[in-house]
Figure 1: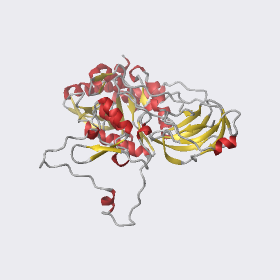
Figure 2: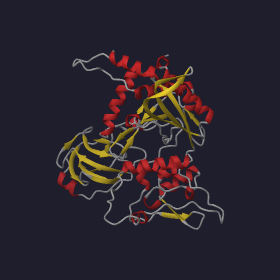
Figure 3: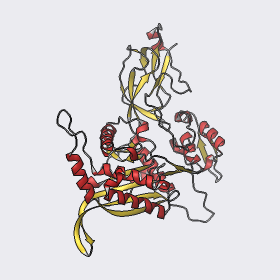
Figure 4: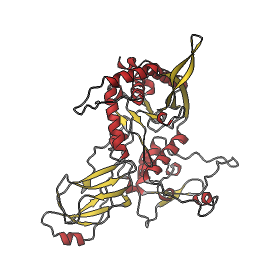
Length: 448
């Protein structure tokens, strides 16, 4: 019997993927573990391995195809001793079960200590366009469209589907929306009392385009990464109460230490240094150690309780074509500056070619966003849940400072800490940024 190769779910929230490249063609024999295709998600390009042995009888989804739903049949495999032509001619029937014929080699990302149970592959919640989704009243005279899986998950979790913001096609509530709602995110605000002013509606695409002269613009469709960034950060700024703390740091000692460390770096056979420490490497280390000194800031907010992390897993924003990604330095407080530096160089290179694995950019306990290399002196960053903090780092520059009644020139760097006020209060956030300042101004203290 032919074996269906299905579009795999490469992350818990993946609903669709782009079939970037076939590494096998029709008629090729494959063994278990052979890499057969490359799949693009919104964040990375990942290789897909065959589980079963046989011959590729028919490729149903050509390479370059975008937005292929998870669990759709992408190819048919003829088993050992099976007629390849007959297997290729047979009409494939997609299974509702998770993909069995192919899977991503990467291990699933480690869940946070208190996390909702992972939902089945999200596209089980998204019926084919021809099937009309079930609807129910939202209690305000309107109808709420939701998938069967979303309704079941909502019922099990005691969540009112009518209060969940849908992100599926045409606003349909799907499984991922219910998972978000279980942690208090993505919920609609209660209906305003009669006569109360309502928030202004957003402009439609048609209304926006009508403001510009026809032919004076072009519309570039959003890719998956840009849509994901927009959804996550819009949800963050709407649902997470941010407050900001800015402080100036004298990094004169840091720059001197950096120069000395780099000068003493051992060389490889080609006489190239084995590492080159950057200011950002010091920032990552200082933030990680500061969180260990102020452990009540090394947390994640959930509705059921505060998640207190034992280690400082620091995400670092990396720009890439079309967006950004945040690879994570795990247990950064335990690592040397040279280790952090080399990990970041590897992450940055693979991020830009979309080769990171999900466990390398999902999770984390805080993040660092550095725009100093662009000459930005000060900015604020949006928190990326489940983090409760993010540190925005500006450029280092010579500024006049007053010391002992005298004006001197010092190398100063401004940093701004964004805090989730649900988890961290003002005084506690001030302790954290104060601990960071002490460490960054006296880098030898990071080693103690």
